[in-house]
Image (cartoon, rainbow, N blue to C red; front, side, top):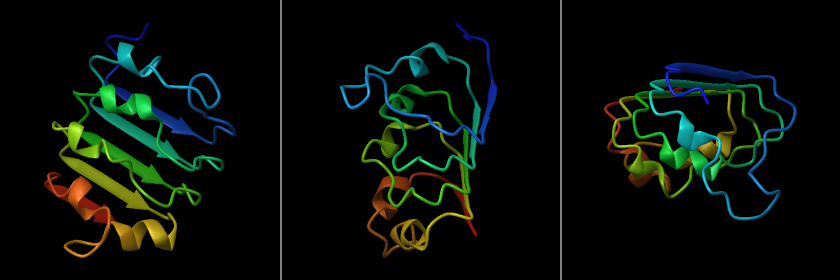
Length: 120
């Protein structure tokens, strides 16, 4: 268990899937990351949705999503990340960028609580 881990970078992981391969995700191994403040997800080619277990990252302050070209929307549980202060979305799908557009995007209500949102 990595209970004291504060920064995690997941880069170029070919397959990062939900627990149980299609079953209900109970949040493991995400639940044990009690101190995680920063998560970077970079170049995860098969990531079509963020893992449901991430909803348990209640101390997360910064989330960077970079080069997740298959990710086209954000999950409904994004508002549960109440400590999130920075969301950085770079080199992702045009669909995701449109959905996150301030005020008009379908996913905007999910992230409007985040003070600093960067998209490129």
